[in-house]
Length: 88
Image 1: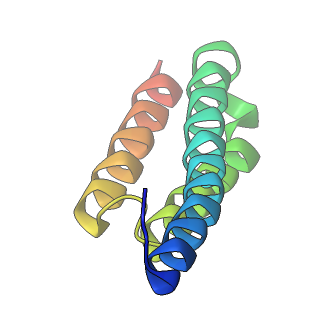
Image 2: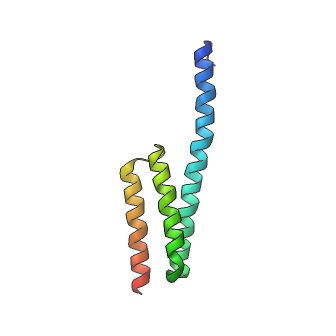
Image 3: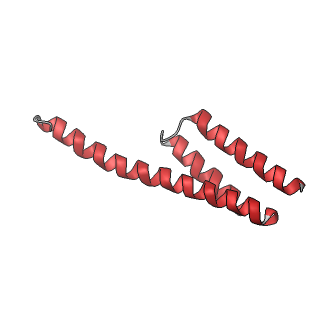
């Protein structure tokens, strides 16, 4: 446990940020999972889900929750899965 006042405040701030980061990470994972499920079920209705997934991934990357290259990789793999499913 921190003893100094500024260390106590830093702990409170990091706890608040952890909650927000966890929420954004969870949102990103859920939207990506939903987009993948729509790709498997209905390839024609995937546009909206893909846009939501891209938005969540970009927000996570912007806030530093995931690294920019990881965001690019996730988006690329989603696009590749959509293209593959629409080709069938």
